[in-house]
Amino acid sequence: MKKRFSILLMLAALIVSVGIPANAQTTYRYIGDVDGDDTVSILDATLVQKQLASLQSFSKLQKFLGDVDNSKTTDIIDVTMIQKKLASLIDSFYKERIQSWSAEIYGIESSNSGNTYLLNTEYTFSVSATQRPVPDDFRVLVDREIVLDKSEEASFAYTFTEAGVHYIRAYCFGAFGGVDSYLLTVIVTDPDIVEKPEIERIDYNKATGQVDVAVSGGTAPYQYSYTVRQVPPPPPEAGPNYVTSSDFVFRNDIDGTYYLYCDFCSGVDVFVPTYLLEPKLSYTLEAQVIDQSGVLSDVKTIYIQR
Image 1 (cartoon, one colour):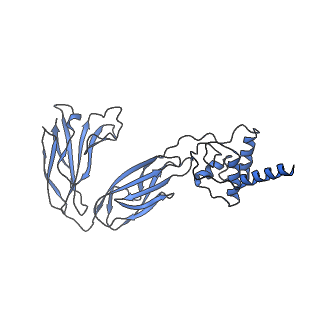
Image 2 (tube, rainbow, N blue to C red):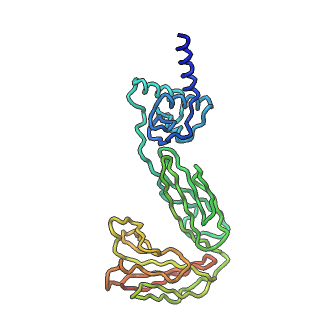
Image 3 (cartoon, rainbow, N blue to C red):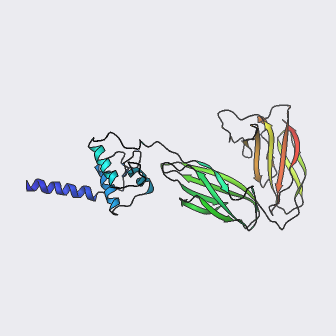
């Protein structure tokens, strides 16, 4: 009898001392499964107890999984609920089985109302993304500079010290895997510069679709953007952000019509994907230039055909 009692004590001690093994398959698919072994067991109740006693640290995902009664905190009641579930005293937890939530960014919002920003002025940006079932982590780069790195905070302040076109790329890391990203293009201008670049002419080669632009004024080098209006819609299976070539992508106008857009780039030798245009119909090609000081030219328009 004493020997049997000693064995039971050893087993109890083993359960109390258990942690998440280094080679555990942390799938995290079920409420209550805080050790990530793809099942809810007495080990999960023990880990919650250890976390409450500050003997085990939980990630925010584990805290969500351990909160089986959805009280927004992990406590002794959750331990009791797990034990009752294992003893078949309750059929299920308040929360249901976790679905495969994927990270998704809706956009990057700014304290500035437009897409033109002033040099040496601080602006506040915030990433709008899914926050379920637990908050996502964010990484944000302005051009190639990391301003947020795997942070729960979704907002940051930034001051542009160089005029011109800048790119803000935000990444969202989902708690259950998956990464989404969003790109915001901003134009930074120097208020002390008053001379604007001017597009003198746009040459379009109907046979090849090549576009060439001549610019004067402002401060070289220049960057160029192009828009082809009222184009046929993209293939239904392609989606609204269908990339047509290395230069142009489809976009949707407010009135529901489609247009092809080439973002600001350093080269003038771009090719309109003419195979997407209807033969013998005329389309509007718009070009705009930004110089090194961040000053935009007026939009110049010509008509093109396939």
